[in-house]
Image 1 (cartoon, rainbow, N blue to C red):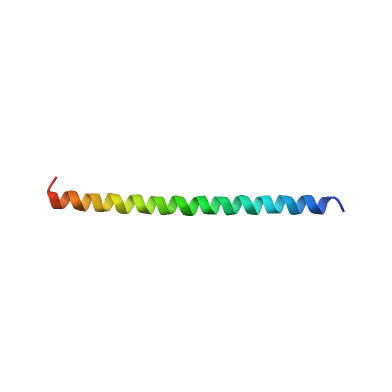
Image 2 (cartoon, rainbow, N blue to C red):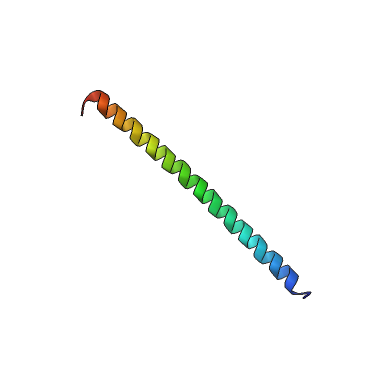
Length: 52
């Protein structure tokens, strides 16, 4: 039991690091997705104005 505690703590910190990394990746992806969508939206509006 004495030796198990540090291992559990290490695993917990690795897991929390992984979940933070995943969260950051998800946030980045959502921002990119939103940016792409708004760019596509503005491109469509511009093409409507020009008449293509």
